[in-house]
Image (tube, rainbow, N blue to C red; front, side, top):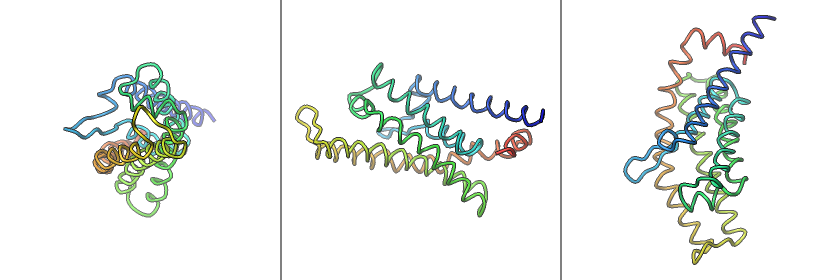
Length: 203
């Protein structure tokens, strides 16, 4: 019983650390988003995916929710661009995709790690996190812009669709490749840690 409580406490501490990292990444843009030339890569989804890999689907849901909530709050308090205001003022766009990022990344890792090695599972998990975030954020944005005939100035809903597709093509592909490559580089040493391996046996 004491061992179980100790393990639970350690897992909560680790989850709290992931949440703290996401808060810092959200508040300090260059820690949560990386720009290479004209390509912008989101790093926060890697933190969410790694939390789901190490601590399970519920942890992924929680860290994803924190990320989404912070995106929603930031769009009202300190937006970095008009597009951020337009997209993330809507809680469905800001929060729902990020919750699903954590859930689907965790599920992808669990399914593949049972059949293949952990490295491939981590790569696919990172890729799933990236694709989920890109597709759902832009897809929901397109739905609200076009389905509800939203406009901003002289820009019509159809024009917004092309803008969003441009973002997906410019950033989404590179972001997916980056997540596929980097996630196992971070996760593999953690999974090999004897202390973490013992801690994670409870999931």
